[in-house]
Length: 241
Image (cartoon, rainbow, N blue to C red; front, top):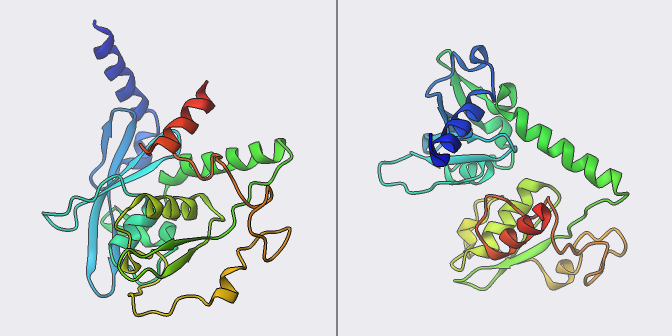
């Protein structure tokens, strides 16, 4: 058997061992693939209705969503938070409760399923790693400017999900106010006053302009193995080295 075939078999076996068969038997759209388990998922907007998609769960804790809300939608490799925003959900930032899967014909929030098992384990390992090193990873608030009006919008970076939303916004050369993930805003919305912008959440000094306590140059919270940007690729390569 060739090495490529062996690798494919190993990946499929990996996917098949992520969960017990009984844990997935009543879920809709289950598909065991190469190193992942895929299920049907969705998010409901009171205005737009249900947006359906496919969620992939990986053993390293990564969650990846391919949207199928319309036949022409080409949004893929979305984080759950990004999918929640894309679906038009009015109360964003609660993707664990807002993104659902179908179990026994009923919509069940991800937070009440086994599908977050590896995501939660990954988060706990990250916290333990930071504690063992005697350091607390902290990221101050950052701003991203709109390409259309030039106004800057604040991003909090206290969690991995929040860091990913900011990371994606910075990577998008066409980012605009309507893409803001936390609230439905337009370019007409007021920008924060300059006197307010100086407060970015540094634990050392409220008006800090950047120090070793609040500026991170790369950690497991703000760098992503599934991102192809050079910054993340370099970080991931150095961690594995």
